[in-house]
Length: 267
Length: 85
Image (cartoon, rainbow over all chains, first blue to last red; front, top):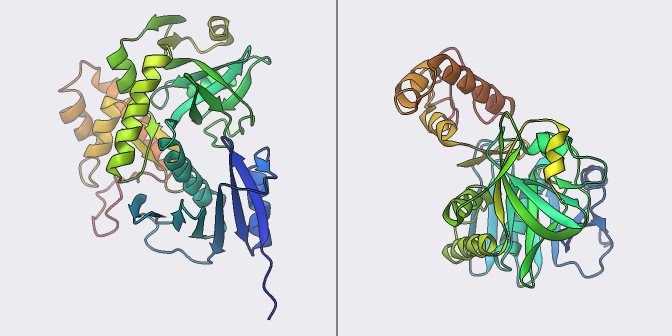
């Protein structure tokens, strides 16, 4: 009997190469479009996922996301997907219909788990590089993440307008570009730089930057962290990461009038 | 509070008032009543502006299929996850 050779693709986000195997050629095309710029070539992926494409919904499409761990095996599920992942074996599987959103959610969850072990996190924020330094822009919805991304001048490299990838490195933090897009619907550049400042955004009648008290900074950071797992150890690790971050990286409040002049204050 | 669309994984980080709206949307209570009873009584806001903001948020969440907007109460048996105007 001949073994079916799957289609295979490496998707490299945040320096973590993830190989996905599937027998569905059309789905590979979907992934190539969705993750253009983040397709890697690693022969030693950190995680391998086998994808099983189903033609129908798995359960109630409205089921909330649930991420649990038992004996070293993570189970990730939502109405539109189910997945398992064993970090020790570097392998897992994902069952979903042929759409780009389900696997995107799995990637987001998996990267939060990877980063939580390493002192990093995913942050609901825009981020960009200017003059070799990375700047993060966090805030509630409508605070201006997409707006400030859209207003970025040509010398700014956009890392994301939706989810920033932050990894601890030496005594500081590095932000990586991500394919996780928001309203701008534009993939970030697959590059990285040391994080210089975290700005807490809000729109106002004029541009100004103000200091933020450490407690406020930590609260605001925590409010924008992505974390899905029901796991006490990793929750504590993520809290610790947030407090470490605000003790090492300046946090400022950036109130801005939505035009390009705001970028005169940044970088 | 942060919520994520199950359709396209879009994230929404909600401020205090948006969080109140989200948590109060039970499929039965009209949006006007939620704004009047839980927003205007707690915050120093213009009721018309508060309702406008609430309607804008509801429309945006509905566009991402996170919340269902309806002119009439939505029966809980229809879907426990639905939220209504």
